[in-house]
Image 1 (cartoon, each protein chain N blue to C red):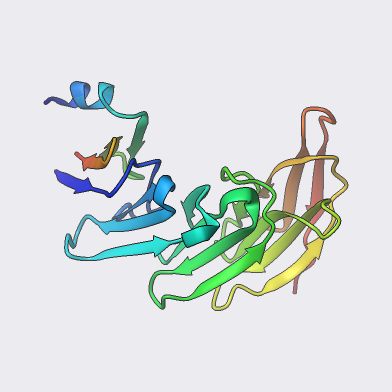
Image 2: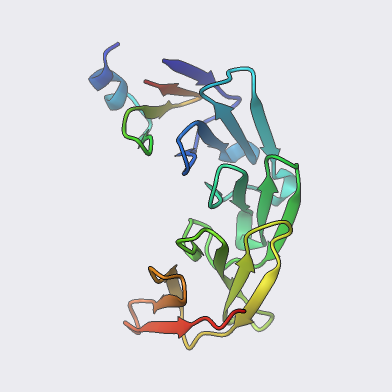
Length: 175
Length: 34
């Protein structure tokens, strides 16, 4: 049994997706994310979103990256645990985990975003070092609700809000 | 405190590990893994 104590109210807990050896703990009021290891109690990681605030935190496709969404959906930040890298993606559409999806191979990430005209946009990113943007496009949505990759990772399924009840399938043509 | 008490007193954050053999329970400033 492990017992971890934090500086303020714990707002989110997520196991690492690959093997469950790491535990992500968000302390939203302080804009902090902690990562604890069950195998090595002395190892820990602290992520501070600072004045940007913390609305949501989650694991990337593996154990090496943590994603955070700032307050007011200003930015999505990709934190590299192994190399301490930090990368930003502007204007994610949601701040509760919706609108972020990984391909089954875990090599691509799709993010629902707002473009400069505040309309729905989708960015597809290469999961790697760095997370290059492979393509962006504007889906034919009124108010994009969420998205997922197809089982073969070749297509993106996007669905609209309940007002439109629309599902769209986009084939990704990424070399 | 037994497992049921712990779950009932949690702040609503109860997450099972991917393998299903562990559970993380958040309560206020603490997270217990059992």
